[in-house]
Image (cartoon, rainbow, N blue to C red; front, side, top):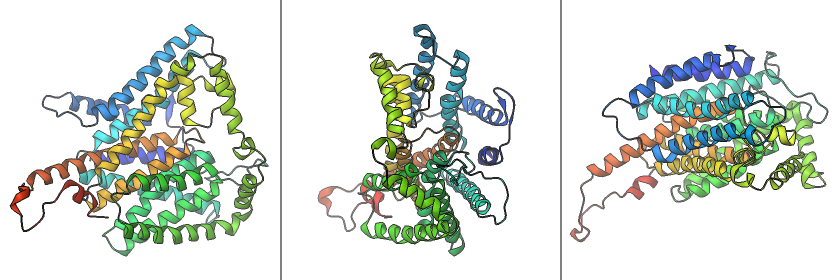
Length: 446
């Protein structure tokens, strides 16, 4: 029952982004908050009950995340004491702290604790992927007018004409969102044991995701997907057999090929225009669509206040000082919270990747492939956000990350129980059958 409520919350948020629904009656009072805070209070009561075991993510995820929120809160409290921030009031920035940091953590918590076992976590992850697939299919149908639903918008400025904004409402953010989910469809297409129908669904989801990614015209999103694939493979190189690698490539290449063929039917000029923009760029600023100049301006402000390299300029102050958002998530944390905040943020991301990598152990085919898809997608996301600020997509990303963290924790627990049940054999006994080591468990599926 709990996972159905979590799926409903995810669906409501996705639909609200797609259709532009206003779910709140006033500031802070919304359907999202009612679901989120209600579930959080339920989980808090459960975790404070006697006899609850220590959470394995306490020091890896929870403490760094809580510390990051506290650092942001302290920064918010003292920013106006040190200097008068233009344009944004103290109230604006505390609301931003709640909605762009605290709520992200709450989504992670709610979806992590909301599912209690491996089966429910896998089922919820699959259902979330189906919802994202449905939104991508609606997007493709709308932009190709089969039929014209009038839901999905495209940019109409001269330099970005035709770029797909998608249900997220902004091309670069939507591209990062797509790069995050795409590897999971490929992974499940390889892992599914439910026959051709299930495999066809995941392959269709893969094609639809690449089509929408191409139509965003986001070079950062595409680069993030490619670089994330390389980075993700490097992280799991010891757990993946060469045969499995070729199998993934053999599946991914035709998927991308079909997607490109469909994308060029009506949008060849858009795709060629994005290629020409990159090829004809005369300098780094032009190639990055002005991002390098924005980054330089932000760092120049910090140079004028050297202490900011440690403490930051103050929570949510980049746009007021520089005049534009940084288009770089890491610079955003560095500028606002200094090295302290950036290190905490990087620690959270690093520990999520580490947890996912270590949990791939062969205990469950579906669990392993979901974890592999998540790891590759998370790596792609971390590359993509070097070129874009994310807002709405983080709700979905942290929710799915919470589900996958539960999959990882349960997979580790089951692997540990399996090792404990395996009889120990003395090395000099020359047993007729070799014992199963943890490393063997990790690689046997791949």
